[in-house]
Image (cartoon, rainbow, N blue to C red):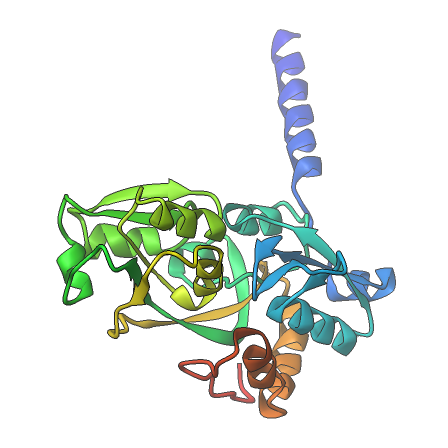
Length: 268
């Protein structure tokens, strides 16, 4: 009797676990609902932020609206911090995610990606207080590098600048504040997204090292195995690249061309 009861309890627990597994909305479900749930960063201009009219604006917002229009639906924006992007996709709280989502092997174990939306060129942002000739000079315990929790750059720093200390913060604004206050010496990241925040500290003499470390490719993130949605988004992105919508929108918000442009391909 006890053995049978134990078996029933195990079956019941397994059923509960099955019911609690997040189910990504299919392409058909998204179209029927009339909305595309898009994860965006709440305070990361010029990617996405709250504008003067109290509405979201930025590169990611324009791209998301264009993608939703391609599907014949409207956007439903969901605020996500950087570290929440992958968990929100896995938990099915959002259908897709923007926010400079760099394609990495580690993330690809949990989520899927579209073809590249844009690139990121890694560099070094620091101040006039730091006198170095190149980024490798930062591999010294006397230097503190600031970094947002959950970004892929963590592995890069551990491999290439293992002697430097790392100060972890929560937002892009926090990274620039740490540099301005002298709590950190440099930011080694895809600095195109961070430079706009330096305007908040006009008395600091900012400088960007001329050397680019590497170029990464950012796609639109979505749940694994959501093949139909990914295929449609890939086609939409191809059209957006070939029509120059992506590059024009990038220049509109970043005030400069993308350092390394994406070469569109009709195959994916």
